[in-house]
Length: 86
Image (tube, rainbow, N blue to C red):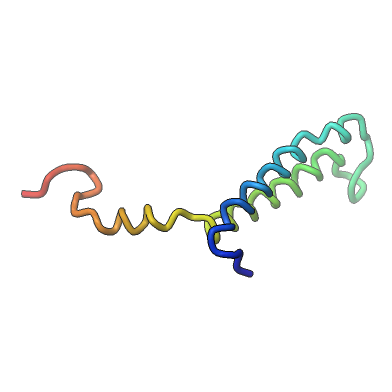
């Protein structure tokens, strides 16, 4: 599943915005229900949220990573530690 060229970052930011709003799960604050009989619903929500955030980060590195920075880093002759070589 490839995003249209140039649209990857916009899609990632849009999904980030949705996750940002969903992170504040105020509708679960007074909910005492248990998921699977032992896990509070608020904690279950955040488990799912954490998985979604991890998937978003994986998608961001796949479709929205700034490749021009990688090219620039590969082209430099300067050592990583910043010291000149003898």
